[in-house]
Length: 338
Ligand code: UDP
Ligand code: MG
Image 1 (cartoon, helix red, strand yellow):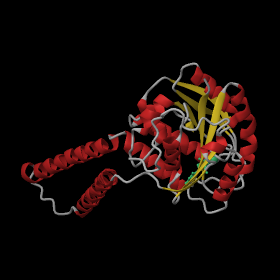
Image 2: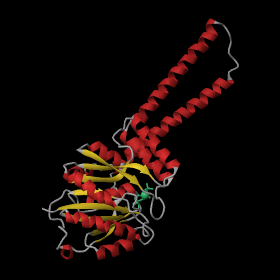
Image 3: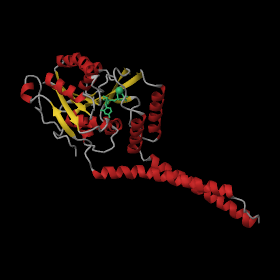
Image 4: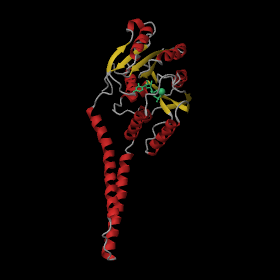
């Protein structure tokens, strides 16, 4: 029985990179075919503003394995991936960056592991080429911080290049949270997990769409969604400060009543206390705001993305090879997850 492997490729302004992606994928897909695996490419255009969508439509017209999806605007990498995960029909699902930083040549190895019985195959970076010392350093710091905060579900140095079995994908798709840090969610669902190692290449074409701002957003999502330790930190901090204030109060009372010294000059300490407590309050409020904001977002129950258009050949044209939806997979057919 032939099985289907879905390959999800999120794209945001990747028009220059698509031709070489297609070139690199061709031999990989042929190799999978030789081992009796059909493939589908789910290419999600995350609201690109260059000609990415036109390129995807053209690719879909050429190749019946391609299913192009255009989101209604730029929802971000994690939302684009979620869309791909929702629509994938495969027995195994791999996600791949469009910029060839994740070598497609690794996919057959991942698939082999899946056939050995693993549900999740993580591709773990051994080395990162072409990334700034700053990015390397912040990435390392980020993973360490996550561990310290007790959100150790995230495998350090594993990006979003991974294979999921149908079983683990169904589990992942059941989690409809708004702020998605898929790496952490994949760790959280459990299942039989294995790793393969690779060297991450520099981006072939174009430049990163993960500027510092988006990276910080992702890091904050990861920390706040996977741990309530920051909330506890605020508690501990305010406890310590409360004790200190109490101690200071005792001292002042002692000085005044026991030792009989009158304490008039005290502007500095007073000012320090006011500023200190003000800062503390603001800090705690900010932290609360993070969580309250998330509760608000979650309660609104908005879909993670909207699909504006799709491009794929009708099933009849693809009939000779593509097993279009021949098994009832758990994936919803509408692009709006509930
Ligand atoms: N991407 C996306 N939406 C975004 C940003 C990026 O779909 O808002 C895609 C992008 O086209 C690429 C992948 O996500 O295929 C990873 O992005 P990028 O290479 O810019 O990130 P980096 O590798 O620098 O972390
Ligand atoms: Mg990249």
